Image (cartoon, rainbow, N blue to C red):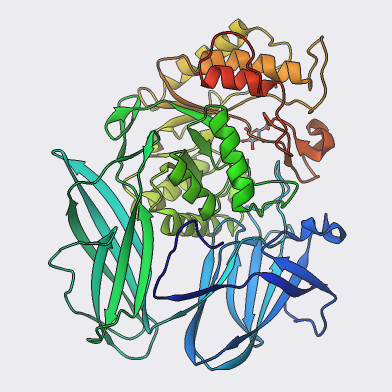
Length: 576
Ligand code: ADA
């Protein structure tokens, strides 16, 4: 499944899923003569027991046929973590980062057989500044769908919809990017429909000349009558259909259907307002990880996670620590689940941030994340650089440049980052929302009482109130505790389910009930696999065990505790 709704009615699309030839190689430059295995696409190669901990290069090959000459566009929704793409033996694309998609175009591919080869690399090296040994697992493989499209010489690259509500009326800025891949100029006309209602605007039906090998952005302002807002309690969505007509032809040459919602998000003083109303955000940090598929999470598995988070009373999810599968974001749009989406980075030192590849890899990830996920009404904030160096002037310069990049692409959403640099962070002037990762009660030995945790929090709050973060909304972006599923003990020792439930009971009773706090995300939704090499002394089973459910989504004792607080039930454990 490519998306949770039909993206094109005119453009030809075909998912290239199923078994590919597969083999392991040492170098990425020499393509293999023979292939020893078959590997399913999309999937992680770790799902095949023979490659359960393989870290290196794997090569995929698929032969495909075209029944007529066409401009072929290949879209890779996710390859973990580096891809080199070859078409009939010629390299046509390179991409770094498992968590954002990329595409490549083969103009005028002739009818007949073609060979697609993808060299995938999930190894760690200086070339990879974001995928490093970490407290989550970097899988390997073509982990999300591959889509083959045929497109005209001029096609619709993206359409971005920015809703506004002024003087009781909904309007929107609609930005359309057209790309001419051919050697000749073309005349383009656009028609726009919202749920099949024709959108009238002077610029529409205007003929635009697009020079060869060039792009054209068409920006229009449109007003909308009789539309309903998107909100968690009423996630109403509309299909925005953009149709492209070329060179006077009556038949549309291309189309792009996006799904949008009318909602506004803003920060006002220390509050976060959705559609002008103050909201309290509560939910989970969620890694894309599952024993059944690694980071290749099918919509069915994502639906189970959403059902559990909904049952627990969450209204939000943080995509810790990277952009998520767009089908999951589609589902959050449909279910009214607010999303904090963040570009890829976790826990990097200044030295690691000064890796020569780091800033470009961050910028690329931000560009791809925002270009592809712009229209999701569920995304209310963009995050970056979780727990990186936000205490040094050099680190701050990098934070500032990345935030500037986000604001250049999207001025409609607030920005933030989650810090653990207690009492030392110097970047709160760069953000719209201050976000704190606090593990009082878990990482601080002996801190058992609710009072001691609250006292520690109040010291953090006093510090924030003496920084440029004063008066801004505060989100507790991470808090939680570990528990090994099935480890039950009346002495509530560390790693027991009882201890995790106790710590979450204390912390939730604080963070859900402070007037200056606008949101709280539990770390974390489910137990996840980690990479050996740095954290294993604190990670029994080579897992991060702070899930409220384990990796198989089996509820721990804390499940009832969280549900009690998130649904504000009276003071007994809720049986799940
Ligand atoms: C950090 C980090 C998370 C996770 C967590 C933990 O806050 O942001 O990715 O590592 O700590 O489990 O300790």
